[in-house]
Image: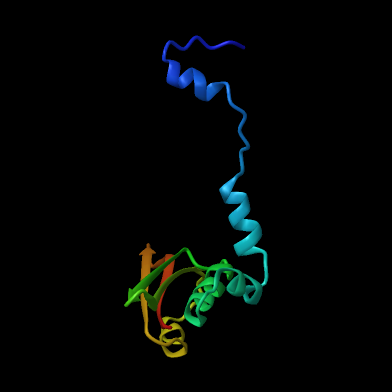
Length: 122
């Protein structure tokens, strides 16, 4: 297949050889699948940064937010979507957790969506 390009700068770029590396695949191989200790040494991560990486690897959170203080992770806000069932008791969710924000959406008296946001001090 030939492409007609009039710009000489673009033509010179297209004539060169390139290697393509998937950064997503590389990130998954190094960060997500490797042992935290090895990754920590490879990238010189602090204990707090290793802890953040461990939470990311748990793969149970819908979203994770990290707040920083002086360039170091300070607080982790982890949002977890819980399975809504008729047997869920809100008092049990409140008693069992640490500092959490619980969001409940009901429809016709039944829980249709249940979400828990935890604050974790690093």
